[in-house]
Image 1 (tube, rainbow, N blue to C red):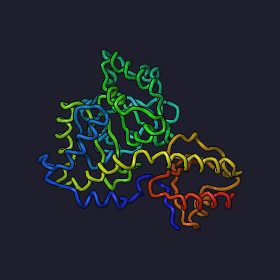
Image 2: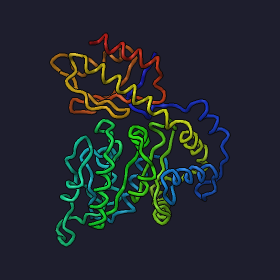
Image 3: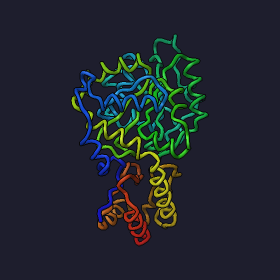
Image 4: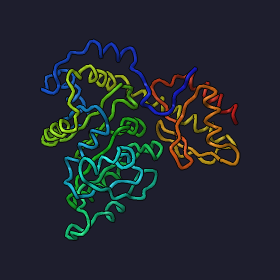
Length: 341
């Protein structure tokens, strides 16, 4: 039994999703004539109560487009030191937009409104970059799937308004936060200037992300997407997967969260585990006591049992539960962990 828990991006389309993809009505989306893409964009915009949406090949491209829309070269955005836009997008902030990042030392990828305000450069001090954007990531990948306190997000919005800053949400795993905290997606739509959401993580699609915002921003995003090479033709086959996921795969995310917490509970009983980060959604980040069992040996023992997880560096390991991690796999994995212990 092979069990792949390196990410929630390793899933394959379910039979129902494949059927939806194969029966999709398609056109040429570069000409905005693909009915399935148009339907997905309308559905996501409505879901967040925002004016418009645009379908992209990847979450990185959605984030990079949003940053390009909200900034000018030489300016600076504020984000947590764990932020995906800083750590995992290939330096695209500087390459694509000519923008630098002011990194905030937050808690598990989450910063406070006070920290954001302290990070804003004085706009009349031309020796430092002009601060123009605040980027949030919810849930936080490197922070272990942590969910932001919505009240803190509202406080940061006020800081942005007070200082004339734009506000972008990298919501690659926002679906997980919405389910875990029973939150209203339209409340997020009312708070942020732009939101990116990913369909190829928790929702199990093979490809695709969507950027939402007001109509003027999304019109501008279409041009940026073209420049970045993100225009696709009969992409309705992919969009159909997204529509299916919205209708069938959101509520089931709670199963991933429950299984992640069960894994964390077992990890906390093992003598060679040094620390397990708090678990709110589908990501488990933990550290080993290397004097008792090295990371290399632990990963090797899992591989002997055909189980794959991933190292994050600095002694941290990560497990991510997902759509293809069935209950039989879950019980087997728990048993292997207890056997190693």
